[in-house]
Image 1 (cartoon, rainbow, N blue to C red):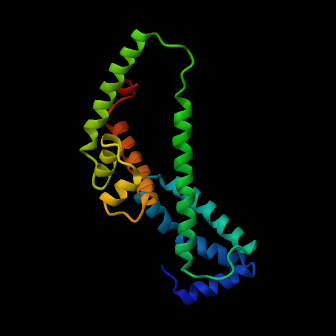
Image 2 (cartoon, rainbow, N blue to C red):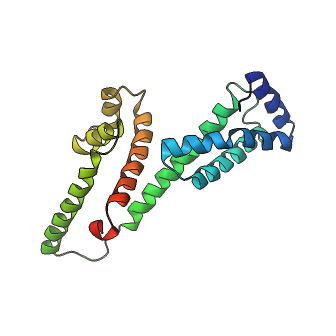
Image 3 (cartoon, one colour):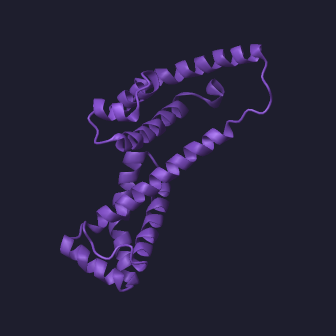
Length: 193
């Protein structure tokens, strides 16, 4: 179900006047669309997408109440999806940073242990690399260029005809999540841990 631009402006005006029923209507109109879009583009669960969409609706309503947005220059759907997309990327980046924090090294390591760990790590990497071939484009190319050719995001954007490096970064996050799902599906924790 979609709303015309004039219908969007009508809804927007009611939202500016504090009409809570209009906010509920907007939520119901676009929730399903965002859940489908978020699952497809970010490989998130329906529950994660719903939580993010609820946060986006709250942020959208706050922007209206605080007069950060006073007129509608695009469709409501586009505006709300942009908020939800930004929230999604922040959550994914935060989760990636937390995963890195969890990998800490407390005790000093003997040289022999370092060599042993490097061998184990390279075996794990080989297993993960073997899964790259199962990734669809553009994920295969992005990850290959970034990790194996050490290309910058700017160069990858140019090579693969993306608008800019921010688009590539966002796509890379999605691709890494896809690769993580493949790793979890193909290997038991003991195989890689």
